[in-house]
Amino acid sequence: MNKARTVLAGIAIVAVGAGLAAPAVSPAVAADRPLNVRILTPDGKQRLKVKRKLAVLVGCTKNCAVVVDMKLVMPAEVLKARVKGGIKAYSAKSPAMILNTPAIRYLKLTYPRSRFSLKVTATDISNGKKVVKRKVFRFRR
Image (cartoon, rainbow, N blue to C red; front, side, top):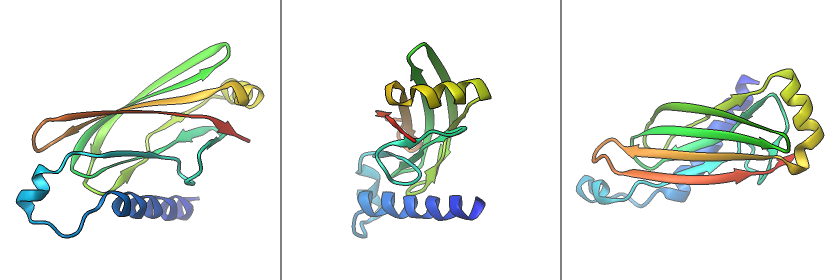
C-alpha cells in the first residue's frame, strides 16, 4: 500500500509539474508568475472510489500555505472536514477524510447520489496572494 501511494504521488507530481511547468526562466520572471493550484484524484480518474479514506491530491506551482475544506454530501447527511498545511513548489499533498463504519455503509448504498466537494484556498508565501479553487467529485464502486 505504501509503495502504491509513493508511485501514485510520484505520478501526480510529474503530472502537476508537466502540466504547470514552464521552460527554465530567470528567478525574477518566475516570481511574477501566478500561483496555480491543481486538484486530482489519486488514480487520475474522474470519479473517486468508495472507500474508508477519501483522499485527493493537491499541488501548487509555488511554495504555498493551503487550507482544504472537504464536504461529503449524501442524501440525508453532510460530513465536513478541514486540513491545513504547506506545499512546496511542484509537489503534491494528499488531504483526506476518514469515514467511520456507518458512514461507509451509507455511502456504499447512496454513492450515485453522493458528492465529494472540495474548496482549496492556497496562499502564496512570497507575496500573500490567495487563490481559491473548487472542485466536486462523484463516486464509483
